[in-house]
Amino acid sequence: LRLLQHRRCATAAAPRVLVIGNTVISTVLQTSKIPIDNKIWDDPGANSFSKGHDDGEGWIHSKEHYVAGQGSCTAQMLAMLGLNTTWMSRLGEDSDGQFARTELASLGIDLGLCLTVP
Image (cartoon, rainbow, N blue to C red):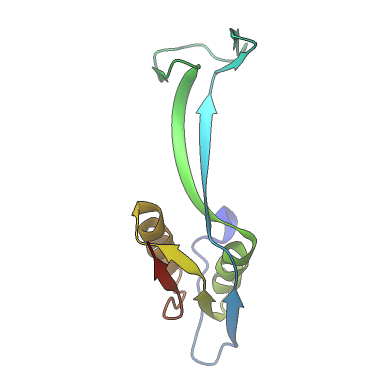
């Protein structure tokens, strides 16, 4: 997805597609230590432990969120390839739902058929 992230070229003449499916928010944590059997195993490539914070389980250096799920990823790729894409899914009224709406809309995806659920 990152390679095509800025390649939006949908036009009125582009084919229109409706994608129906699930929306998932994936969280990716980057860490230099992984707890295994109550022991912390150091990453030999890490040269500093001051970049993250100790969460009691290890060291977290970064936390990123992505809109995922088979249907949602399909809609994103079609939009990035230039198709006029409409997305139908259920999105929560919480912060994850708002994150998904913002990300998908930034790709020009029509969210008019999405249902908002508590």
